[in-house]
Length: 515
Image (cartoon, rainbow, N blue to C red; front, side, top):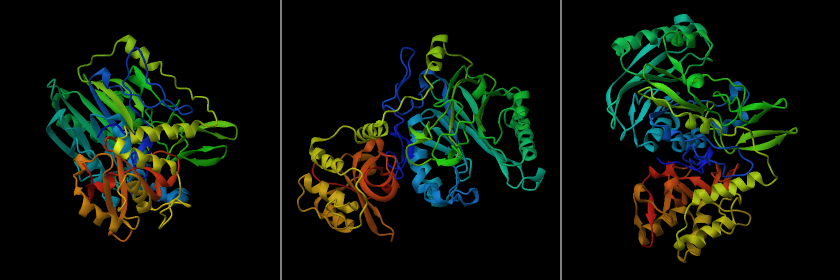
């Protein structure tokens, strides 16, 4: 999966919800220059540190799919917590940052959470797949030597209300032959005694699976503790190093950004969904041991735009929040080599101060994100795309075919096809449009999709009921009209715009007409 376009979890830009976090365009970092922000009024994007060498690792608590927000007084955001809304954002952040190894927490099977992650991240090999803590590593870069898991806390022990496990994989790097271990953990959320017990048993287990502690190691996880707490200090006293404090390159998209984002922050005495929480609290960590040394560390945040609240400019995520945690990421040297002073200085010099916002900042960003999401335009589809952009943002209207006031999915696609020269293409429902494509076109595998291809998927009743036009397979973006999904090109939900179409590829209903 390649870099995606938004940085927020917009199932659209890369997500149905905006499956893409709006514009987290990855730009390679060099000593001579640092990636600049393509959108005036929004904050600099997350940084690509792969040029530093070594292995890039990510820890990401993606939040289980049964959360509704009711218990936390956030029930009115219930739709935003659905995996269909925020899942694309999760994938968008991963795609943007392209880590070599990922340790997940809180993955479950409800709402197809596990299967959509595995299917979308098909360039990874998965370990402990059917658990809440799978580990994924790049198939082309590593060979698996071994893997395993151990329960370190049982319900009832030390007051624990949940079972806890540590899971691991031993990998050999294809190019260098370097062998190392990656562990993934999720400590107890509310009980320090249970966290302490889990840490003690994890350290004991490590001695068993890495005799003599000869192999370099990395632990990824939601530790539910800041570094100063006893459960974390147990690791530190045994020689483990925290990337968040020891890596010479420390990157934060915002000063004091918290890894636990809690879906937003209090601003001026009221909760603002999507506001970037900046209390400095890090409970998601990456620890290294032995010759594995952290080179760079960052908290990865979805694209945000500065908005005015009570006279203060507050960064607010563009689109759905992907999870109640931001992923944390580190570049790790397996042989202990460190970057040059020039590299460290260049990366640490990235401006972490919010930019000034002009009144058109957010709109400008949306337009640029839209253009990036569409990509290069095939002349055969230029008129159709121009027609759709003329109606960008118009509301979803069931049965809408004219844009007055809005469109449904078949209405906008039908008009686009007719503008492209297919005058007999139905303006009616998507089922009739599918029949037309079967008669006049041919089915295409998702891997061969290109601009102008039409895809179909089920509607609310389970039969064919949705349609869209693919515009940029590299970014998985399509032009559609949806009711409530987050768009990839705007901080709004629903209407005509860009969306991430990958959810629908599993139905194998992509058709091409013409050459």
